[in-house]
Length: 258
Length: 98
Image: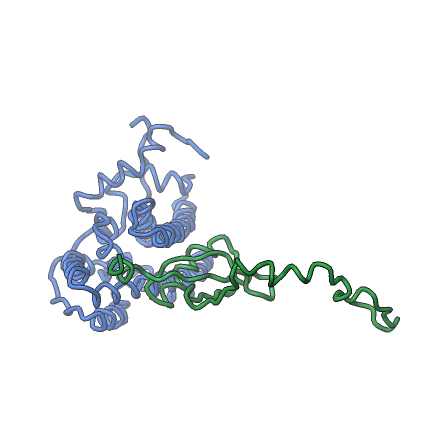
């Protein structure tokens, strides 16, 4: 690794933006791992499209976070030159892509959450964030529909597909708690009108998530007490491996561009 | 073979109308389990570079096509009927755009 790592400041505003921006960035990375590997060509394109939508959202958010951080960094430096503990995405986003069932179920959980979040952020006191949200709402709405459709097909499909959905739900469920975690960063964001406390999205998310699970014939999971801590930079064992792949080019060829 | 065929998703023809266009143009085909999936896949495969504002999908099996073997009988007789084009009429001056 020939490139020095960078750190970002601890301002709540920057942290709030990075939690969201890193969520989009890391999920984009995981979804893009399907390029060339999806079960059918059409889904290969659909998943790649989705990864690019998320990457676009991440670019806007990281650019804005870098500007507010005021250390002269740009989106690329934030995306590729931070160390693991500096990434603030919930652990759910970094879990390995798993099988197709896990991928579509996670996409459904995250897109439902993002759609609720983006809708609230459209009214942000931060005009830049509101503009990013305005564009992202349409993308998230399509992602949600696409994922929900697959959750229904697989959950209510064959014995094999339904078993895979149940297994995916078992793996994913404990990590969903973190999507509704709440701390001083959320409180500051809510007080400034920057964006909602994530905890306030919980009720709507559960209603939508459970409705589709029920329709797919999947048993609703029991609540888990597990609380992952990705939002505070404490990640799973998968994060370092993912970052090694993701950061390789910028670390090996500093400042490399297309 | 016949059991394989039943397990395969049927083929759909995709038609896309672009921003400026009035008609949906045929742009390709894809396999999908049902109409909803076909529309969604058509969106992801055929409109990802801003090609479209509307999509139609139709089961390929529902299209009735003319027989290529009857091409001569069907279309050749039209070759020497130039008078079927309205180029031999004097247009009244009041008609400006034809």
